[in-house]
Image (cartoon, rainbow, N blue to C red; front, top):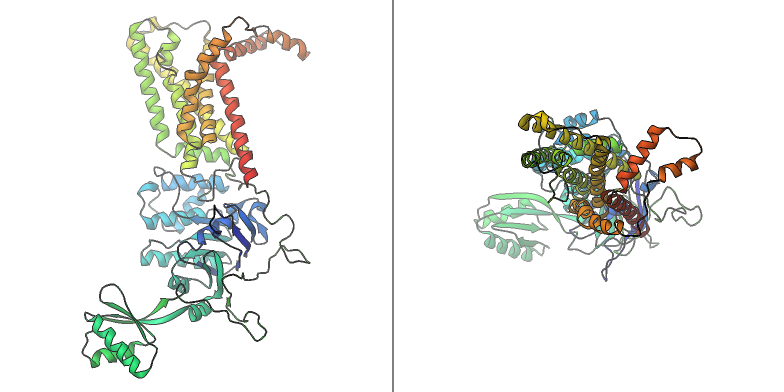
Length: 602
């Protein structure tokens, strides 16, 4: 059961809250429609239930608020708007990535593809899907964790009649299995056809909470739809006869040659048209909406309380009482600690490393960047090798003196920036459920995958450049330097550091361009500044640090460990190493600080 109690959004500027003291419940085994015109607060109400909007109130999902649920995707399936996946990702890749985020086996993606009618479209790009297939993908994403509750915002908008019928059949099947379904709609006829209970909003406040039969009886009224080439004449004669018979008939002219006749039936309208010789092209009984035009009655008993029965209607200012699960035994208010307070982000993804690998390999930008890096490095290496004036390490790395960074470092930084930049641009993690969660596990997974990609990219550049240089200029011109271990450590450290700078920069500023800017800031701004500082007369050398650390440690280190430690310190002691270390430290602190500030706001 879903129970929303006292939901109130935080007002912005001088405007009233979009949702004001909303209380209702959606029962298991039933489909509940949240009905309201555009701007009535339906979407804001869903976001308050999912703890995505700041405000007051609490929503219980089978007796627990969302921030107390260990695995939210396995309890609540959400579809808010279109699928925010990367348009170049395939349907299969999107579902497999979300399987890792939800913590379910990857085989679940294939099962749901077949269940929602997407079989055969697994290799289609998300950006090329029609709206019907896109909505099916959204439902498959919401159902990945086999949730008990489904929350959907305008799921039938823009769908054809057969697709809409299929959608509501699926929702009905989920409810018949004991699940809870809550969806929003602006069409009263849609609510009457597909819901068991209708909760009506107006201006962010609850105006009625009724079963569908009571809603159809009290909130809708029948009408006769007429299409005729003599619409004005028919309207005049129907109105004239109604006045003569003193019957309350209202005739409303619609678009074109269509009329809507309220207070009559098809037989009476047809007889009138026949008597006056008016041709009829369409004559049908329909149900028209008057919920937004008529005042909402307050039906009471002799004691002044709400009328008992299947439907409950209240004035625009009064909420419908509910029976919360976790309440104070004396006051009936939500139990202590459940009114809101500090809210934790949803625990997603549940398998961050697997999720990050799927995210990286599921878009064409990854192989394209890698291919561009290899091609650029090979081209620059050939040009530098032909001149003969550049040192061998610069030739192999494809790093000309005019460039702030080699192509491999730029490519690693760009891929690192994409890791968080794509999360904020296409927030597939939460599927419309707010900002990217700042879990330490997700950050560590992104740093680990970025480091792995950087190491592979750096090694591939060196190997490919060496082989191409040997093939073009001959092997006798290439000699391995004696300090190759220190050179390799410096090279790989530079590549990994740039990748991490891209990850953290994009995570702090929520854009891939900011991650690339953080990468370029190291050689362009920080390295020249540190070179001036480190070459001053007051510089202290850290050359004796390994021996001093050995004295403090107690046990004697082996000469090999001492050599490796000294080499690592020499690499870090270079201006580029110091600048990169300071940049990464500053970005990490900024990432933690922005995450803590966001929690404090909530």
